[in-house]
Length: 272
Image 1 (cartoon, helix red, strand yellow):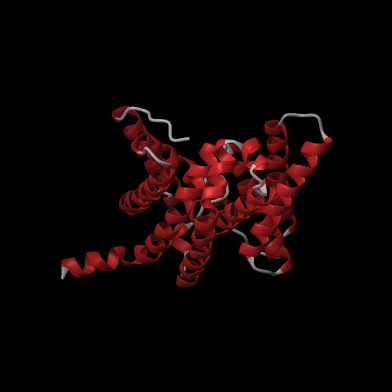
Image 2 (cartoon, rainbow, N blue to C red):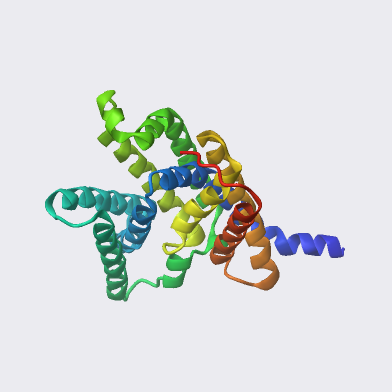
């Protein structure tokens, strides 16, 4: 009887566990590319713009995932235009866009007096509030992302290794970069409910960084990043359940612990 009661006590974790595993599988290869191309600040900019996308979607009553994708892509296009017009460093532009879109999102929230909104849920995630429709969305969107990434993989690697050589070889570098941005925006949109606007880049980057010392090829690093993300989701959920802690931050902290372990116990081997 006690065993049945314990099973019921943790039964509510099945939906977030399935959703978390789906997000981890997508985040692994995309996070690896972010590390190879040094796009951490770019990921922050897209994730911070996600709050503006969420609030505008709620204000105008359309799909939140589409809202996040649309605003993230607009931020990416705006970044490209500003780089051509303003004589400032890329990290300065990324910081400008990142905090401007985050502040705009918070301002829009302030005007939405007639809509009850859980701001902390958006900022830090609420994976326990997932439903089966969210899980289906994650796996459908994740399948599209992974299939698209499989087709683009070799081209992305060639652009990452030497962008000038890729241009000489005739690769459509701009289109490849835009496609990656689009896949990243979709991933951020489906994962924001899990770890929130402020932590989503950590879920992308930290498992990939933890996988780097364990890998001797790009493909192995991408796969192991997904596995490490999966481990972090499972352990983070158990910690959250046992000690009644926020789940999103718990998952990110577990990822950091795994990163520390792999960094201290293995010899660094550069992949790209």
